[in-house]
Image 1 (tube, rainbow, N blue to C red):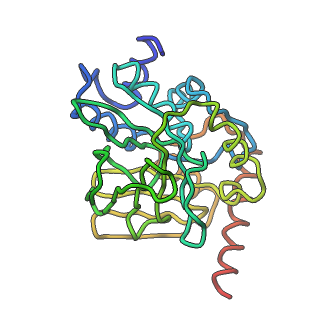
Image 2: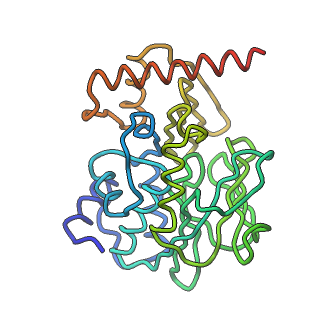
Image 3: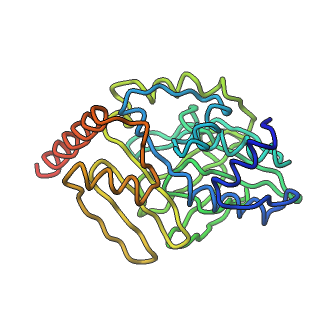
Length: 282
């Protein structure tokens, strides 16, 4: 549990006043504010700055102006919701990166559910390109802005659920177990994702932020904007342009990152982008 001062700072970070007693309307408003203002981002992995899955550390990270990936974002959001009186559960999940990889709820993703007003809601501010609002935890197809998502019982996590991503987005879906989990259940997988040479997070930096009509997404040197049915992408060819987009589009000014670290991060990012272009040309 966090104290009222921290809750107040968190709500100011989200640009919202106290939502009052727990309600579905309040949950939706908090979720929207979180994905609009707190970016999905993996920059510290490329900077070689270790993080943990401790939710209180993740809260401080959000309050400092940074974002993170699922363990940070959902861990911090769950802590805020709990402090506001919501009944929140953590669940072991796993993102299926592409159809060639079998689906698995292996702890590579932290999923959340919230019980509110007699129903259960799938809550996830840590999937980057996905949810703008929570989904009712029942089988169905759900439209949010330009994206169509789905929920159905999982084929790989008995009693759990399968989230289907929009077909035009970057990964097919995510499965999660229904039994509750805690921070310790994710520590090993977080360490691997953050440090292993084979981890996709080690290849190039990513950032994403949802808005009501779409998404801004940065993968390496490619900035994608989806606004309704309109999609545009452009290559960021200079360090100044790249760091400018991080600050202006994703709110990541990175005052704590010095000139030498910025230069190293840009070199790694640009090298990964050029290697990707070479592979695509084959």
